[in-house]
Amino acid sequence: MEKNKQQLEKQKEALELLLDTNATDLNTYNSDLEAVKKQLKEINKPEITTYQMDEITEAIEMAVDQFDFTDSDNWDLEYEIDYDGRVNVSNMEFNTITNLQEEISEKVLELFKESELDLNGDSNA
Image (cartoon, rainbow, N blue to C red; front, side):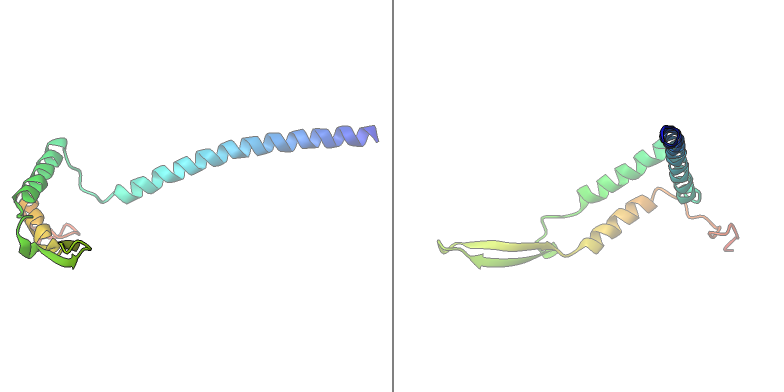
């Protein structure tokens, strides 16, 4: 009986050791997998310098700053009358998001020269 208990305790310790080792390996594999997934996601992205990123950010800021948010035609407003008889805006929705997106796109695209190569590297000419 004592021999069986000792064997079971040794077997338990061996299994715990294997479990610890495999858990460490599993964590390593998971982190390696995440790194490879990130590399795959970014493999076809063009590289950009810090200067270029700053230029793009500045172009976006300029486009947003120049957009006329005060133009009432840019908004859909719903009014209501409150208990004191005052007229209030109950809902305000920005309805010209496309115009803002176009202005931002134009400012960013001004920073680049269009390539004559398509995505496959073939000439469009």
